[in-house]
Image (tube, rainbow, N blue to C red; front, side, top):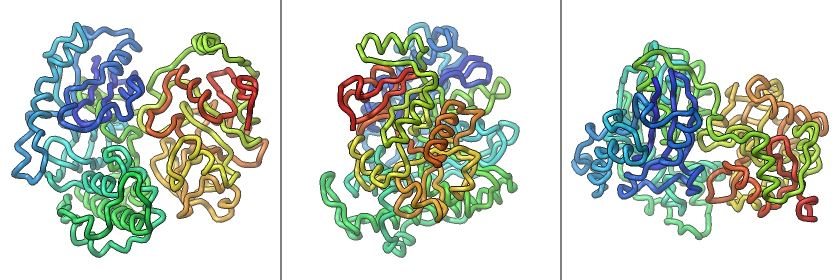
Length: 547
């Protein structure tokens, strides 16, 4: 069975292709359009489809639209109701629903040859649930939390033998995702985009507004929760986008973050009991990108293991919808990795370098070449293999740096044009993880924070956040042999089995996807080495300058 999954209704439009139960390709539209998050989450954009991502998924598998058995659309307009009586102030939601109803015709126009009758609507939170539960093996509890779906903001359920049983769903207007979005907006950031900045800011504050928030935000004991309207301005003055960031703003962020974590823990305990105490909890939805909360659920919750979908936001519903439909025809395979996007052959990469007239070499080992530069304090643009699905750079489209230089955090934030309070993350050789960090293991997708052992904080200061934690990616040689070799080469030179890993992009732009985009970043940012597949381009050779 060949199923194309589509996410388009809110934000982060994406496409994914599942063939005979195996995930073949998945990509976000932003990687093609170069528009961050693909579009803004307004009703007037609901008709916009991930046309480029969908076309690539089909081309990657050598398929045409008429070859598809189904197209799975991750929103079901038949479940929608008038949101006014529910207390949701969205006067244009009817337009969004109307566009969703017309999705089969829009898709047929975007993919000539597709029969619109092949389009199947999958409830939004069921798609999220499938992206977690089915990708993790099809057995275990599943918890979905985001801003909203058709009429709910949450799903708690359990997968047994690949089939989902829903145990609870929180109706709107109560939403932990929308709570965090409102806070993001109040703090002067872009909602449905910059929530991760609020999470980072929270580490600088004290949760002194927690008593007030406990009155407004709480679990209900039946698998759901309540989020009452909050007068944010009564707590802290609203910050303009270019306004000063004060201790009060950090304290408010810390208070909401702490309350979110507590409610998630209560929901996890309820789900454990209601689902019969399974060993595994899987998570998806935008809230599941909160790696601080995830780590607390893993550490203090009742489950033996927590697995989070790397594309936990709405982009992941494209894959979840496809898997949900595919599962009706048989067993689907677990997710093997997040490297599901585009790839260029060595010959194609070399042709791009020649076209750009950049001087390059093909060293015996690109991992050793990069390790030399990193050991000298240089920044490396690392472009290897298939691009990642989801918001995390995982060693395929990454900026790499030395973790032992304290000033590297500020330097990388300058290179990327980011706020200085934001941390940078480490990747570590899996076999050395326990020597340096404490927390969830394995952690291949950077979706949990870990405590840095005291004896290591001074050795890798660039990746230690203000609260003594780091968002770690564990690198396993059987999954990522080239990155594992890079880490081994770097350790041989420095004694450190850790390298800084941040996304290969600059502020406000999607991650680099194509070789040309990688070269454009290399040419415009103070990066010492571009490692483009097996090829090396040194800044000094290309431009006659270096750091």
